[in-house]
Amino acid sequence: MVASHWAAASAQTPSRRRGAVLERAILDAALEQLGTVGWNGLTMEGVAAGAQTGKAAVYRRWPSKEDLVADALRSGLPRFDTVPDLGSVRDDLLALCRRARDAMFSRPGFALRSVIHECDSVQAERFHAVIYKGVIEPTLEMLREVITRGIERGEVRRDAANSYVFDAVPAMMMYRSKICGSEWTDQEIEEMIDQMMVPLLRPEGS
Image: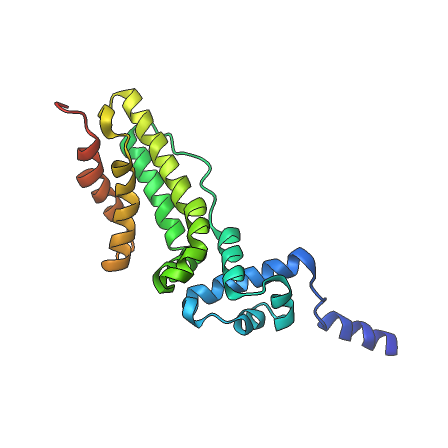
């Protein structure tokens, strides 16, 4: 009787998490906090409560809020490692923009935007490398490949492979998301590509 009672009690008691499992729970809790209460509302105590662990377990791994958030963003940001190749620059750009839209409105995307929008210039500097390496650089590299491929196919003017053109899509998506509250429906993405990017990239006389 005692043994069966002990077994039942043990089954109801959650096992103590350690190592990578606990770290993943803490990072997930940090992303959740960023997406709900934002950078200014995030606290180490709140993250610990969300991860169902003690505050000491958080501080033992991340001595500051900035350290924790930087690692949470690195761990949560999607990996852009495959470039769309659908046969035309228009279709490739559509696929790329839909992927970027989905990333912007994912939990890590909301977390990243809270950091960008709420941090002051000194705090933001701490996350510059994370944002550049995790989001900006891979996006620009994929745009470069899509546009270069379009040049090789004769769909895109040869002088279009420049930083101003590469910046156009990310800048437009961030601006309209932040200033206009756009959620970037498929129709809005198609309109941006057809009304801005296709005319901008089209060779003269075509």
